[in-house]
Length: 92
Image (cartoon, rainbow, N blue to C red; front, side, top):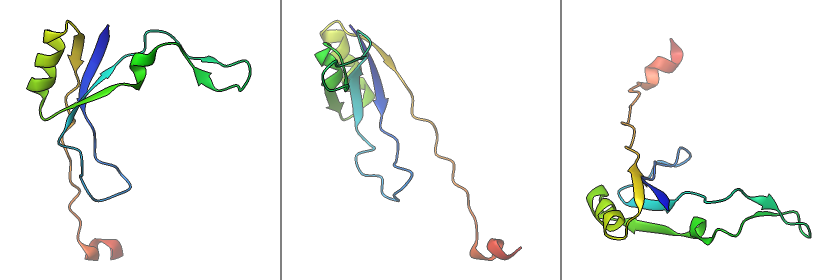
């Protein structure tokens, strides 16, 4: 049972940073998805893919994974790079 712990990045289409401070524990897929013969939708018998657990910080998520024997890897959040630009730069 493997999982990944990560922090949700900011949505590129919006300026707000709501829900980006929480850490998420998400299980990795145990089996590949296959098309349903009747509807053609992709699906699998692995129900753990539907579970997302939210934590206030990475330490709490790691402690939970250790407590329940989940092999988890932490994906660090990439640093935010701001492109400082003045309005006058549009006319150069």
